[in-house]
Amino acid sequence: MSSSLKTRLSDAVKNAMRARETARLGTLRLLQAAIKQKEVDERKDLTDADITAIIEKQVKQRRESILAYEQAGRTETAEQEKAEITVLQEFLPKAAEPAEIDAAITAALEEVQAQGASGPAAMGKVMALLKARLAGRADMAAVSAQVKARLM
Image (tube, rainbow, N blue to C red; front, side):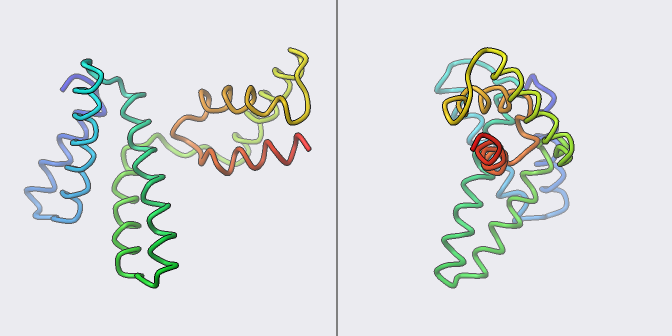
């Protein structure tokens, strides 16, 4: 395993095995499998950024599952999903502060408006800039809602 994030993940799996933490181990193994699958599909070693994107996708899937389970009244399964999110978030970069997110949105809006785009048409360009700047550090759905509110 070449990247530092992969090494941290591998070490976490070993530690979970030693501590006999079955729930944590299962989550980590699912993440390792998703990473390995992506490497096989693309026939290349993944960078930390690629792995972060996979982790974000897994967190998003679990959040969607939690909503579905809670609506179906399956609170025990929803709690299990929440525990898995906690494990996955250990491998994501530190979350951005709300002030930092606001500053990034303001900078991106100014940048896009300087290019001549404005109003709802600028949404895609602003989000592309923000996704690169805040990758793994912010809930992009919430950021999108903030951008949309500012553009209206």
